[in-house]
Length: 278
Image (cartoon, rainbow, N blue to C red; front, side, top):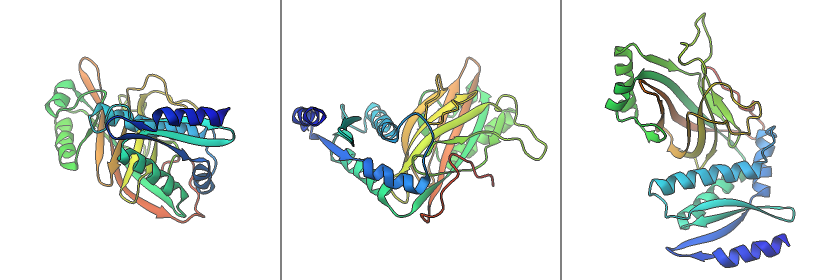
């Protein structure tokens, strides 16, 4: 019955308007190959569901931004014991998903080096720098340096978080930590960035992140409720995005930068979700 439903879905959606297409990817073996390198991620949300959730989130954001045609999506369908990802979109979307699957089969384990900075400032400073809420805004280091200088001038909060070394598809968390007798400022102490990432190659990765004030679910595979910002995007090495939350008088920004992607051997499993403090 499941295979019949799959055939009917393909019959309806195999070709769509605007040069879009629908394609089914067998992802069970790819996810198993990745799990052999990272170890099992504990949690109630299954890997196939998390993979679909991440890819679909990125596609939806790119549709909203006008980068993708309307209708691009990724959904999961079970056919017997098979785990299948159904993708609808143009050739570039199909190629993107194939690239992700190829990366999972790779012998090495990519490590994504992530740098995060929290900034808290008066709302007028954020507006002067073009920051808006509910968007992932790409910002280069020159723009961020100018913003940081203005934040310091008005005695706002500027806090660099410990570097996080994330591995593919393993939930990561960036958060303030006390050190050298210092505690994070009260306005930044309970801010966290939870996310998942999958490399597209040596220089680019897909991200789905949630900027949160307060505690995260104990199960890291579960998305937090009512995040300050919930965004999905792609980044090249050296690029960064600003996630902004605003109230009537204050703007709070989480800046995430992909510093680089390095490869480790298959026999060096990561500590799941653990930050590496430099």
